[in-house]
Length: 452
Image (cartoon, rainbow, N blue to C red; front, side):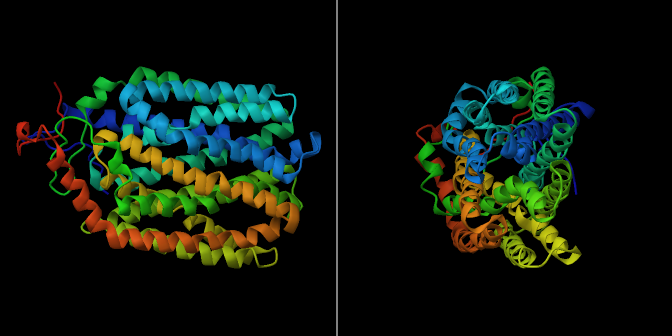
């Protein structure tokens, strides 16, 4: 894969000078990747201590699910307004404030003395994490050319699962050896160190120098101003991308939250061993997210609509394998099917994120990702673990997990509709320039930013 980060300027030269022009975009990518890991380490470490909290505080599965879902629910509800604020207030400052807030909330989780206090700390955690995925993604994609967006988006979203691996695996070990409170404190320290480094390296001026956003399908920039927010909701193909991806996150959210408990209850593992076992499958989810994004970029390089087809194919594969896996008796064959299902269960992420980027104007792209985050959390990461918690109290955890893959059916239908409407969606985005009162001041030589 060609990893060139910059687009040519009008004179045919590369934006930036020498090696520096290539280093900065990848520094941004690395820091956004690391902070996404920190985000999910702080969020998912809770799953590794579910067995401990259940015994220590005598909690039901629905109460445990509430601790997970409150974060995803807050992220979903606040992602759009916080993303809108970040687009206006400054994306870099927003990232710094959010990372500090979620790290502080993680410290409060460690200090919680009862269920209510822990729930309150998790509420604050969700507030801090609300718009990071959307704002961080917009910061990162802004310094890379569009043909790399699915692969890079998949990598950043994969960081969520890699962070979950560290949170679940390391959290289980720390809880076993140092107590569950130490697990939260160490996750918080990692986030605080990264945000200091991010603040030193990244600023709005540098991002502007290396910006590579270009109009889609020949559309000119929106008069140097901001496209209307309404354009994020009046494009039917874009709406299908939001909803279809959100429904698929239902399954990913369930696996992230409940795999440690599944191994603890049905495979007779300790909390530490269950966390390690679950981390292997979460690692598969992360690897699948990255690699499936790379494949989606490859097959969609000349025909972008094929990214929709890739998302649908990944969903079908994950659904079949997970349904078979949770029906089989314990053993290597069962683990193989669950592993393949885990690998593909979030493979859609990079492709659908690239689709959202292609259907939204650069000036409001963080807001577009915010709408996507809202859908991902409301339809998936918040709803999934909570529904399974309720079903588990009645059917048992295994019985609940056997029904989960059917969520893919709805997603496949919605994504199929979005793919059919995709050409019309691109035309609608291109037509935004016709509504621009400053259009006369625009020329056909609009280009990407280059260094001052």
